[in-house]
Length: 360
Image 1 (spheres, helix red, strand yellow):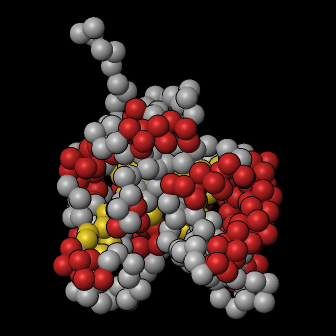
Image 2: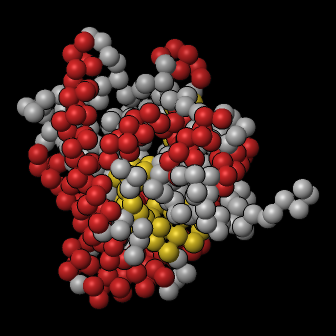
Image 3: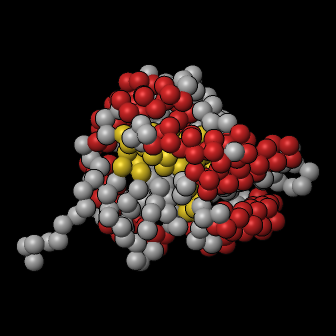
């Protein structure tokens, strides 16, 4: 069984299988291991080798040839996750052109494959249930085109967000509800799930499945799927084709015992600011010294033992796909952040299949 694991270079993780992404190592808590087994399935297995990749939006100013060259120069990196619309943009791929010409699509795939790289996933993070109907249509269109293109390119996973509706059909902005009181909050939350979220994904999930594509939703605050419970709730309603893109950075700052498509991305917590204001922080990411937490390069928010526990937990549940580095660390340059993350993870990723316990 294949999973997509995205580790964001400044956040920390993402996993994609029919199941949610990885959970925490057994050393952290039994729950995380059990959650991973539930999402990946009791019979998850494969050659259990993992690979390193990189998410392409960070190379917005480069051509595709330059992106490929940069990826090849990073220690241990053998895959790229290509942005195909939504908020990540589509700077390195003309989606409509490739969909209109299977020959061009094959040339695109060959350009990457001939360089010794694979495409681990297509990513189109957006909000297809945005109250602004034009934006909702744009993001839904990007998702469906990404699914069709993934099938054409023989890429098994499409990554996106779950989305977040407004508080009514007449709303203008999404409304992320985090408290059950006053009572209209809980009523609105249930309306969002029952009338918007579940109906959309009960149709979108099978649409992707019909094209042979798995969906990896990144749990992200601001959207209806932002933690383990909400990810499981949506998957139960939408089906096993809907899993998660595990980005540990968002779970780290929410104080969650880590679950996982995997984005390798870390987050650093400012304990002084948290002690004063808590972890919910709407200040700009440019106000780095004032924020409760920041996205950090992998290894700069949590140490090597934490990431070794994550990799070990992934192996225990049968994860055998890509750990994709996403760089969003404003304290490090793109080159320095990616070099640091790739070097760090290349020492940790278990590439060879495990052995039989010969001592028993």
